[in-house]
Length: 126
Image (cartoon, rainbow, N blue to C red; front, side, top):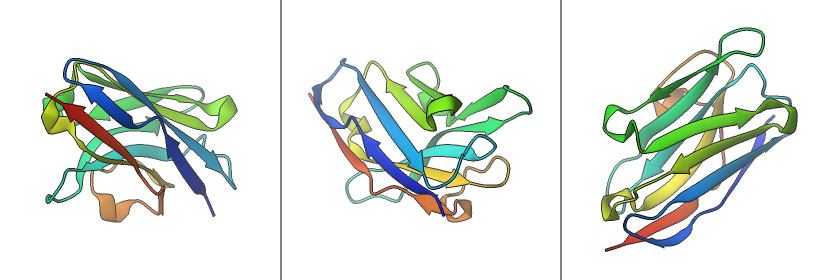
């Protein structure tokens, strides 16, 4: 079992930045695909970004197209942590952001992730 705990959410003005953190425990997630998803108010959960193991110490990052350039996913395998750096935030980025883990390779589908954190609220004011 993998437990995931997100932190770093909050209220920020448009144009600001936030860095979300996801702490994994229970198992080393070095070879897991780690993803960030978000659920805006009244909308479906959507894929944000993922980082997948590419062998050795290499990881690939994947993003939903519309967020490329503003959001950056990273991970610290030694600490079992995953991060999401969010810059130039917009009101439409307001959502509950959740961290997820998948023991297999890349996926943008939330139903294919086995483990989930409880989520952290990000609110961007205009």
